[in-house]
Each structure stands twice: as C-alpha cells, then as structure tokens.
Amino acid sequence: MSALTVLFIGGTGIISSAAAARAVELGHDLTVLNRGASSTRPTPPGVEVLTGDVSDPASIRRALGDRSFDVVVDFVAFTPDQVQADIDLFTGRAGQYVFISSASAYQKPVAALPIRESSPLRNPFWQYSRDKIACEDLLVGAYRESGFPVTIVRPSHTYDRTTIPVTGGWTVVDRMRRGLEVVVPGDGTSLWTLTHHADFARAFVGLLGLPAAVGDVFHITSDEALPWDQIYTTLAAAAGVDEPALVHVASESVAVVEPEWGPGLLGDKAHSVVFDNAKVKAFVPGWQATTSWATGAREIVEWYDAEASRREVDPATETAFERLLAGARAFGA
Image 1: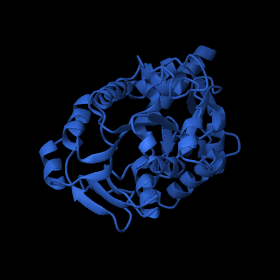
Image 2 (image 1 turned 45 degrees about the vertical axis):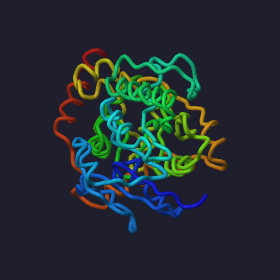
Image 3 (image 1 turned 90 degrees about the vertical axis):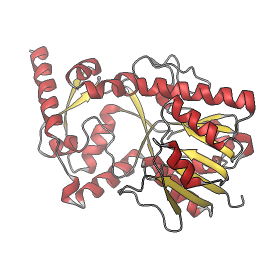
C-alpha cells in the first residue's frame, strides 16, 4: 500500500501510541493532534505534532486549517456531541474517518459466544458503553444518509507495559509479593480476553486507507481467552510469586464497596467474553495476535520494576481490599 496522509486525534494513549508506531513503521505520513501534555508514551520521531484541545472545536479548526487527510482517526471521542463535531469538521476532508468504539458495547449479559461484529449492542450497566453505542448510531446514520466514510473499530481490554489489567493495579502485585490476599471479582472462572497494544496496532493500521472497510465495523482482540484466576496467577508468576492468595468476591459486592469499579465490572469484566476475529483477519490477511498474556505480564512487571517511582501502592485500594476481605471472611464464617 502506498503511503497515506493520516491524522490521529489523541496519539499518546495505550492504543494510539502503538498505532502511531506501526503507521510510521509502514511509512505513512502521520500527524498527531493533542494537547501536547507530557506522556509516558512519546510520539515516534518524524511525526508532525499539532496542538489543540478537543474540548474546544475552534482550537482544532485553527490547528488544522483547511488541511485534508486520507485517514482521520479520533481516539478521544466518547460522546455523540464530540462525534457530531467531527462529522461537521471532516465531511469532505477525510477519505476515511475511523471511530474507536468499545467491545463493552456488546450485549451484557452476553447471550451467545463467540462474540461477532453482528452481536447485539446493549449495556445497561455502563454509561461509557451506552455513549459509544450512541456514537456508533450517529455515524452509521451519517454514512447511510450522506456517505460519511466511517469505519468503526471496537477494541476490548487492550494493555501495554505501563498498565496492569486487573482490578487494583500495582497494589495487587505489591500485595502478592507481600503474601497478602488479593481480591478477584467474581468466582475466577469466567473467561476474559487481554490484547497487547502492539498486536492491536498491526491489525488496526492494516484497516487504514482500505476502501472495503468504509461503512463497516470490526473488533480487534487476541484469540486467547483465559479464566480470571489464570490471569492473576500468570501476573503473580511474572512478579516472582508462586502461589498468590486469591479471594473471590462477587462483582456486585465489589461495586458496592468501591463504586468507581462497578460499571467496568458489571458492564464488562464480570461477563465471559470470547471473540471471533475472523472478519478482521479476512480484511488484514496474515494478521493474528501473537503476544501471549504470559509474555505481556512479564513485560509489565519488568517495566514497573525498572523504576521505583512507578511502584505506587494506592491506600484507597488497600482500604477497599481490606473491607472486601473482611466481608468475605465474615460471610465464610
């Protein structure tokens, strides 16, 4: 494929940073537009960086001027009003507009596995997911009515070396190393899919500039679906802990004690998810996710262990765990 002119709105997040690196690797002419804030995920060399605030459409217009792009990807659009602003701005100025939705938009509870792109969208538990569904509806309408060239991509739980994809973050690893009990929401047997951001990026960038992808929707995930207990024990092994003390607590109870964790648990992680990636594999021949969770977990622990300032234990998380563990002991008694 010849080089594309590509605009990323965002560009320093978990997904977008890997996508930026992949786009540069393939020789695309990449421009990144964001607030210019410092990040642990620096922009690759050779990328044009523009400064603008997505909450201020006027600043975005000033930054872009009258430029057009082969592909525009908005990594930081979450609500229909933000998407409508993009439609207004990029109509006639983008050969393809890519919206980052979420696999959490799929029907919860899940009615049938594996999940395919045609699976119903409905999430009564999480406003974030409902907003993504509303954004998709708006974009599909724009495509049908005026030909707005949208492609919708639904990531699931995508991680990089800086993110610990279990409830409680680094505090969980620290407690494991101290021999303390850690809370696993649910019974530990439901299946979950974790996708390394570099794997995601290889498929994602393969969809950019692809005429057949316009008007269509794709999810991109690993094919590895693991029980939550195995996710925790694999992370523990990477941290040098052979037998972590895992205590199972109902996700509903976790949501009561720590309300901020509730929507993401009840609206996503509490449900088994197994994805059928046949569609994206057909559009991006030869792609498959190759980074196992065992490899990813080692990468994460190595990154945290490389610098003491990264290994912060959150007192609020410790308190929440102790409350949940006390409840579990009382219930068991």
